[in-house]
Length: 179
Image (tube, rainbow, N blue to C red):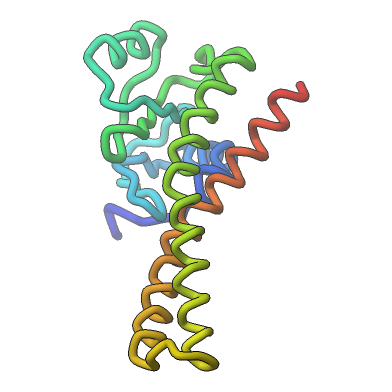
């Protein structure tokens, strides 16, 4: 029987709550979160537990940050980079974010971060695509058009992984602000 398994995430900007609920259900079956990768979660076989998972964003956290959660009953499980942190706690523990303002702050930071990457990438993608298309009609050399087409494709991949979360966080923020 395998001791680890990998499950995909629906994307934290879109399915954070359902991902955390899914991790909770799997923990009750004995599959505990070990670490997170960009596209999903690595789980290890363990003793079934009635625990909840919660996610927080904090750039370059210090010991005080983790101590605050620990005093609130939350145990740090894993981090992705130095910004995304997942915690676990026994079922019924007071949630990490208990009010709208802290939730808004949580998502506003992520929206801004993704937007800072997505907007320039969008402009670059449009420019590269334009040069690639123009190479078929005007003086732009065919080799340059082909190179811009390839670079446009690559930049559109970056745009997908930053633009889509930007849209997801924007949607969450609009819902939170409406109440």
